[in-house]
Every structure is written in C-alpha cells, then in structure tokens.
Image (cartoon, rainbow, N blue to C red; front, side, top):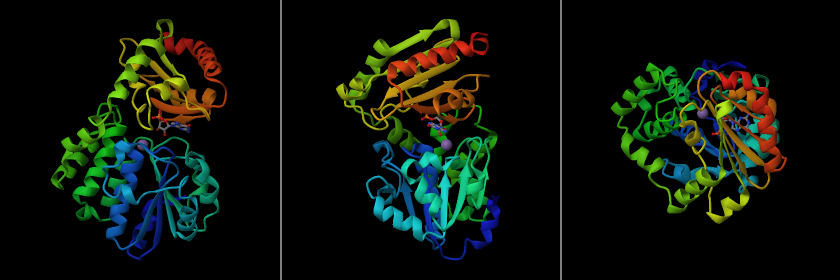
Length: 336
Ligand code: 5GP
Ligand code: MN
C-alpha cells in the first residue's frame, strides 16, 4: 500500500470514483463517505457512494444521502459502478469482509482500492494506496486531513463540514473518548469557521427517535440486563422477539451498549442482539481492557481498544454462555 499522498497529484484529472464503507454504516462511515463525495465532485470527478447494506434513517439528513446506493437492493447498478471505477475509496473499515456481500466484487474490481481508516490490522495487501492510523478519532478526521493535505481546505463547504462533524462527533461519543485530541477540537473550530451549525446536527442524530425506542430501552434495562459485579461486567442479551414486539428498526439499538458502561465500577459492557441471521455483539470497555482482542478471540470480530463488535452463528443462549466463559478466562484483568 503506497502512501495516500501519492494520489494528490492525480486529483486534478477527472476520474470515475466509487466510495464505499462498512456494512450498516454508522455516523462516521456515512459522514466521512459523503464529505469525501462532496469534495471529489467539486474537483470534477464522477462519484458514486455505495453502502454494502441499508443504514439507519437518522443519517438521512446528510447532504446527498439520497444519492447513496444500497448494494443489497441495487446490486446490478452498484456492481457496474464498481467494475468501471478508476478509484475505489474504502472508508472506515480495515478488511474487505466488513463490506459483507460486496467483498468479492471489490476484490475483482480493476480500479485502484484506496484505504482511509482508523481500525487495527488493516488488510494492506489489497489496497494500492491508503492511510491507516489507529490514533485517529474517526475516519471523518482522516478525510479532513486528506482535504487539507491535498491543498483543498478552501473547498470545505457547510455541507462537507456537517458530514465531517457528524462523523467525528459520533465516533468520539460526543468528544468524550480519549481519542479526542487537541487536533480534533481545532478541526471542529475550523469547521465552525466554514459555516457548521453543530446544534442542528445533534438534534438530527439524537432527538429524532420514536416513542417505541424508549419503551424498548425500558424493557431491556429492566428485563435483559445482567450485572456481573465480580467481573465488573454488564451484559444485555436481546432476543429477536423483543425487536419484533417493539418494532425496532436499524439504528434503534445503536449506542445502547453505553448504558451499562455508565454503571459505577463497570469496566466491560456487552450487548448481544439476536438479529435472526446472526447474533451481533458490541463491546465497550473503560481503561485497560482490550475489547478488540477479546472480540477477535471469541466473537469473530474486532474494532478498537475500547470499542469493538463481532458476530456468531450460535443461538443467543449459546453466545451468552460463551461470553461468560470468556469473561471468566479474563477474570484477572476484569476483576482488578
Ligand atoms: P459497534 O459496536 O458500534 O457495532 O462497533 C464498534 C466498533 O467495532 C466499530 O469500530 C466497528 O467497526 C467494529 N466492529 C463492529 N462489528 C464488527 C465485526 O463484526 N467485525 C470487526 N472486525 N469489527 C467490528
Ligand atoms: Mn469510525
């Protein structure tokens, strides 16, 4: 993988570009992709953003989100764009498997794959160009760096600023995680100077839920949460029946793993959701417990040191048992 700066001199030649990100894109995935989209369109490229799957409706306020293709629903059209692209920007994921059914199509594409990502252990051999930096708060921050380092700072519009802000804000837990460096705050100051209205973005993302989501949260906190004080761990296991009963939509479960993490003394919070086709888990930790390694070892997943995810094919009950065994195996680190 050559340094991403190698493509800076090529940015002024019009190209066919595809931008993609991980399945079920979150605020950072969608925000960084659309920010880059708006920049590259201004530079005269022909650009298509393709998501491997659908996404949460609370991201639909993002400028040009309506142009984003859903690979699962528009497979043929998306495949044509991917096959014809000169550049395939891969944002906010480290391995092509994170694009689910798109993996093979991306691998076979003739264009150059370009990585911009902050997850550990990137699959560098499949990218022609790229930047991987696990110290970065978000991929949005990295797209901001890309824009500035390629000399396009003056092209940051309020639309680009909104997308970048949404990405960095959601990936830093509203600027609370240790990854929130002074540079992150400097970037936000710069975005404010470019016309960012941050308060409306918080409203779009956090004040737009329906009543059923709160009834659902009440239910899971009362009936589905278990606190294992001995291991400073809290877990929530959600059966599929709950998702159906409360009409839970994509995105309604995002961030719920943070509730048990705010219980005093809790170092590890886990949520396991039975999504039918698989059991999806999210892990969050405080301090020196590495959930990236934990998710990799037991749950076919990965992510960051303090935030990771994974999935299993076993039943929900079996995954809970597996988790409890894993917790016991890590008792020394968790109990201290
Ligand atoms: P979340 O819990 O919000 O789904 O994900 C937290 C972090 O873990 C994100 O940075 C995400 O990219 C990563 N992650 C989530 N699920 C998976 C997975 O199945 N595999 C891998 N490798 N990473 C994941
Ligand atoms: Mn991210």
